[in-house]
Amino acid sequence: MVTMTSLRDNVLDGAKEVFETMIFMTLEETTDQPWEMEDVTLLGTITFKGSLEGCLGICCGVNCARTIAANMLGMDPEDEISEDDINDAVGEVANMVMGAVKARIQDHVSNVEVSIPSVVQGMELKNSLGERASELVINASLEEEHNIRFSLLYREKDD
Image 1: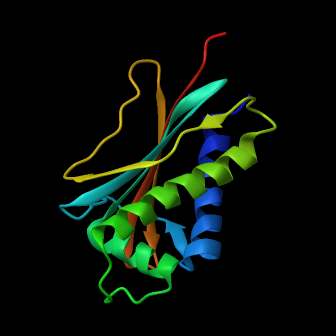
Image 2: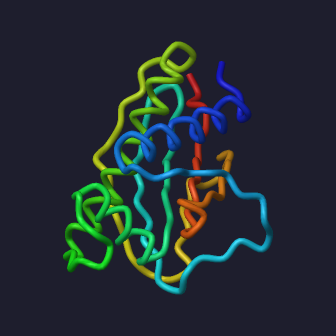
């Protein structure tokens, strides 16, 4: 069985690994309150099912998403980057972080199947998994410059 604490550690460790190795940015958890996001944000989500089902969400402001996309594409953040490339980058980050989490929990959670990621843009974006869902949230900073939030909504599937 996987606990909320172990899931939280796996999400944070997986996210740090992805950002350091694939995006070349340092990710650090922040505990500063209040934690604020830019007005317009992007939310990349990826769902999973099996004995544990839920959704991993990655939410960040447009400027943060542009920086992530630039690093992934080997560009400068000031370079022109299409909205499609920015959305693809956020979706791919959700995919890679979920892959890192899945690899870390596979000995404790059987049969985890992962969807393709999706990305939406708007204001005050939130995920919901309905009743009986547990949620963990990790607020972090990238290079001490950008805010990013990871959320994992999940529930154990009834057998």
